[in-house]
Length: 258
Ligand SMILES: C[S@@+](CC[C@H](N)C(=O)[O-])C[C@H]1O[C@@H](n2cnc3c(N)ncnc32)[C@H](O)[C@@H]1O
Image (cartoon, rainbow, N blue to C red; front, side):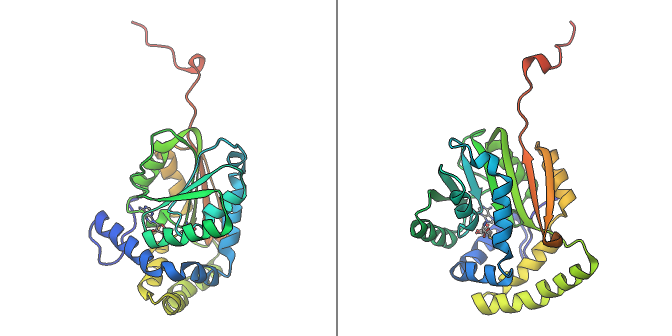
């Protein structure tokens, strides 16, 4: 499992630059295209994510970060479900400009900062929850992205990854493939003026690891209680994982005999 490889890119640096540039080009129409192309299902997927992390959100002192927050739709949904602050980060400035406008308009208790999810400017073991919606697939190294999430989460902290997946049912899968490869680039291109962005989308979904694989990588990078659920017939999967608490001294293995 490595990371995203947009066509024509040859290194992680080039891939990251391509991803940032592409989102910069579609930012002005991103929300409109997103809701239209998903038939508004994206709102339900984010609402489900918020419900699954509610036990952390309900704690007023919990520190919550939504990485790859883009124009802030998950960030705002999280903010609506808690009294405390939520923080968003993204490395694409035009997406953050749009997020900031929405935060102000809705008077949400949220702030955003510009930062790379692969190198978060955050102290280790300091967050209770990290969420990421449709951003993880765009990281240039999935394993390193998970290691970074693990670094900044406290013991007991939780990660939630909402991402496209592969539909489970053969017929639905065929319809979905046709829609995402033939229809989506055409409509997405017309709406945003960036056809390449909507050609990249199905290609990046096709190359993205399936849900059991991602779950396994989460376990390997130190997450526990890893689980996932498919949404909308497997078009999307929501993964959850928790950072283990340190063992109490009584449960630690005895020191070796001299
Ligand atoms: C498909 S958008 C999703 C935005 C938002 N989370 C949502 O649910 O609509 C993906 C976002 O991930 C961001 N992104 C991709 N790679 C990133 C990275 N390494 N660091 C920070 N942001 C990244 C992009 O700039 C883009 O805004």
